[in-house]
Length: 116
Length: 114
Picture (spheres, rainbow over the protein chains, first blue to last red):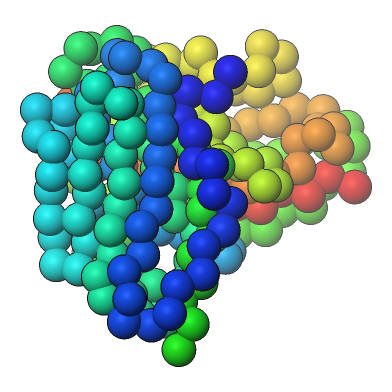
């Protein structure tokens, strides 16, 4: 039972355009969400996070949107750059609710390719 | 400021041997998580440890797998009598406090079982 789903295995975007990566979750106990970026043969690198009390968080070119009623979040990258090409993982945990031990539940990832 | 360190980066074992994976958290971090990533999959939680204490091992297979985080030294993930299905990338992450979820990951250990 996949509690965090990234339904698009891959995405190609032209350099300078917007990249939108989507993530859906099913567990209503999740209240903290993170995006990680991963290059081959490296560990995931933290990008941006959002708690359930917010619906938007912005950091430079990266913005995460959370729609709690739809159990959906998205990561926007504007403008996209070739160096953004990587696999992006959505992750969720139950921090505020205290359910579990703050373990992260990951989606399967979306491979983003930014074409120069 | 060194990040999370893991060694070895690559480990090859034959079926039935033991695998030991080491993780040194970021300086000042006293909470360690281990995750496993199978090919084409996301990372799956295995175990959460504090110094000298296992907090949550609900993601660990019941047999052959164990983890520790001693008072001194790195955290160790130990897999006894490895099988081909154990081949995966094993990542550890560390946090400074238990209630922050910005987990910082190491580069991983890629285990191959022949």
